[in-house]
Image (cartoon, rainbow, N blue to C red; front, side, top):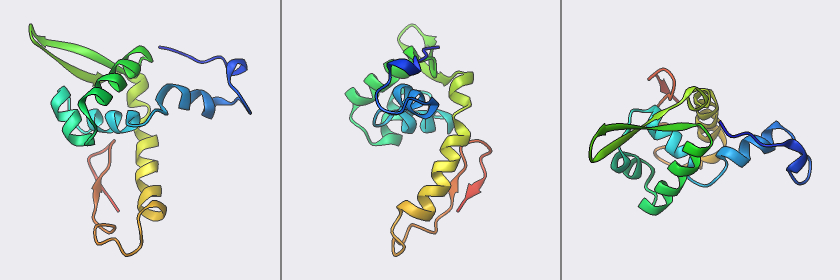
Length: 127
Protein backbone atom coordinates (compact mmCIF):
# COMPACT_ATOMS: atom_id res chain seq x y z
CA UNK A 1 0.00 0.00 0.00
CA UNK A 2 1.29 3.43 -0.90
CA UNK A 3 1.53 5.99 1.83
CA UNK A 4 2.22 9.69 1.88
CA UNK A 5 4.69 11.54 4.08
CA UNK A 6 2.89 14.39 5.80
CA UNK A 7 5.99 16.58 5.66
CA UNK A 8 5.89 16.41 1.86
CA UNK A 9 2.39 17.86 1.57
CA UNK A 10 1.80 21.57 0.93
CA UNK A 11 -0.24 23.77 3.23
CA UNK A 12 -1.59 22.21 6.42
CA UNK A 13 -0.47 18.59 6.14
CA UNK A 14 -2.84 16.15 7.82
CA UNK A 15 -4.28 12.67 7.23
CA UNK A 16 -7.14 14.17 5.16
CA UNK A 17 -4.63 15.69 2.76
CA UNK A 18 -2.71 12.41 2.65
CA UNK A 19 -5.90 10.46 1.88
CA UNK A 20 -6.78 12.86 -0.92
CA UNK A 21 -3.33 12.33 -2.42
CA UNK A 22 -4.23 8.64 -2.82
CA UNK A 23 -7.95 8.68 -3.66
CA UNK A 24 -8.77 12.32 -4.39
CA UNK A 25 -8.39 12.23 -8.17
CA UNK A 26 -11.52 12.79 -10.21
CA UNK A 27 -13.37 9.49 -10.72
CA UNK A 28 -11.33 7.58 -8.10
CA UNK A 29 -14.07 7.22 -5.47
CA UNK A 30 -16.64 6.44 -8.16
CA UNK A 31 -14.43 3.56 -9.31
CA UNK A 32 -14.31 2.33 -5.71
CA UNK A 33 -18.11 2.73 -5.50
CA UNK A 34 -18.66 0.67 -8.63
CA UNK A 35 -16.41 -2.16 -7.46
CA UNK A 36 -18.05 -2.12 -4.01
CA UNK A 37 -21.45 -2.40 -5.71
CA UNK A 38 -20.30 -5.46 -7.66
CA UNK A 39 -18.94 -4.08 -10.94
CA UNK A 40 -15.74 -6.07 -11.32
CA UNK A 41 -15.10 -5.87 -15.07
CA UNK A 42 -13.56 -2.83 -16.72
CA UNK A 43 -16.56 -2.27 -19.01
CA UNK A 44 -18.95 -2.38 -16.04
CA UNK A 45 -16.88 0.18 -14.15
CA UNK A 46 -16.79 2.49 -17.18
CA UNK A 47 -20.55 2.16 -17.66
CA UNK A 48 -21.30 2.78 -13.97
CA UNK A 49 -19.14 5.87 -13.69
CA UNK A 50 -19.94 7.38 -17.07
CA UNK A 51 -16.28 8.36 -17.38
CA UNK A 52 -14.16 7.97 -20.51
CA UNK A 53 -12.39 4.61 -20.77
CA UNK A 54 -8.91 6.17 -20.67
CA UNK A 55 -9.74 7.99 -17.43
CA UNK A 56 -10.98 4.82 -15.76
CA UNK A 57 -7.90 2.92 -16.93
CA UNK A 58 -5.70 5.62 -15.39
CA UNK A 59 -7.68 5.64 -12.13
CA UNK A 60 -7.54 1.86 -11.84
CA UNK A 61 -3.75 1.95 -12.27
CA UNK A 62 -3.43 4.67 -9.63
CA UNK A 63 -5.75 2.88 -7.21
CA UNK A 64 -3.91 -0.38 -7.78
CA UNK A 65 -0.55 1.30 -7.09
CA UNK A 66 -2.04 2.82 -3.92
CA UNK A 67 -3.21 -0.59 -2.72
CA UNK A 68 -6.91 0.28 -2.89
CA UNK A 69 -7.87 -2.14 -5.67
CA UNK A 70 -6.29 -5.28 -7.02
CA UNK A 71 -6.42 -6.86 -10.44
CA UNK A 72 -7.66 -10.45 -10.37
CA UNK A 73 -6.92 -12.58 -13.45
CA UNK A 74 -10.04 -14.53 -14.50
CA UNK A 75 -9.06 -15.85 -17.91
CA UNK A 76 -6.09 -15.50 -20.24
CA UNK A 77 -7.76 -12.46 -21.82
CA UNK A 78 -9.73 -10.92 -18.98
CA UNK A 79 -8.94 -9.43 -15.61
CA UNK A 80 -11.41 -8.27 -13.00
CA UNK A 81 -10.99 -5.83 -10.16
CA UNK A 82 -11.60 -6.22 -6.45
CA UNK A 83 -11.24 -3.97 -3.45
CA UNK A 84 -8.40 -4.66 -1.06
CA UNK A 85 -8.88 -4.27 2.69
CA UNK A 86 -7.91 -0.60 2.25
CA UNK A 87 -10.54 -0.22 -0.50
CA UNK A 88 -13.23 -1.88 1.61
CA UNK A 89 -12.34 0.51 4.43
CA UNK A 90 -13.46 3.37 2.15
CA UNK A 91 -17.07 2.16 1.99
CA UNK A 92 -18.18 4.08 5.12
CA UNK A 93 -16.70 7.21 3.51
CA UNK A 94 -18.76 6.54 0.37
CA UNK A 95 -21.91 6.06 2.45
CA UNK A 96 -21.23 9.33 4.28
CA UNK A 97 -20.79 11.10 0.92
CA UNK A 98 -24.03 9.52 -0.28
CA UNK A 99 -25.95 10.88 2.70
CA UNK A 100 -24.24 14.27 2.55
CA UNK A 101 -24.79 14.55 -1.19
CA UNK A 102 -28.49 13.75 -0.87
CA UNK A 103 -28.89 16.36 1.87
CA UNK A 104 -26.62 19.13 0.58
CA UNK A 105 -25.39 18.64 -2.98
CA UNK A 106 -28.58 17.79 -4.89
CA UNK A 107 -30.99 20.62 -5.65
CA UNK A 108 -34.11 20.56 -3.49
CA UNK A 109 -36.33 20.59 -6.59
CA UNK A 110 -34.50 17.74 -8.35
CA UNK A 111 -37.16 15.07 -9.01
CA UNK A 112 -34.67 12.26 -8.35
CA UNK A 113 -33.50 13.77 -5.03
CA UNK A 114 -35.83 11.64 -2.92
CA UNK A 115 -35.03 8.40 -4.73
CA UNK A 116 -33.43 5.76 -2.57
CA UNK A 117 -29.87 4.81 -3.39
CA UNK A 118 -28.20 1.57 -2.46
CA UNK A 119 -25.78 1.79 0.44
CA UNK A 120 -22.28 0.72 -0.55
CA UNK A 121 -21.68 -1.42 2.56
CA UNK A 122 -24.90 -3.21 3.29
CA UNK A 123 -26.97 -3.18 0.11
CA UNK A 124 -29.60 -1.18 2.02
CA UNK A 125 -31.47 1.74 0.56
CA UNK A 126 -30.33 5.14 1.79
CA UNK A 127 -32.39 8.32 1.30
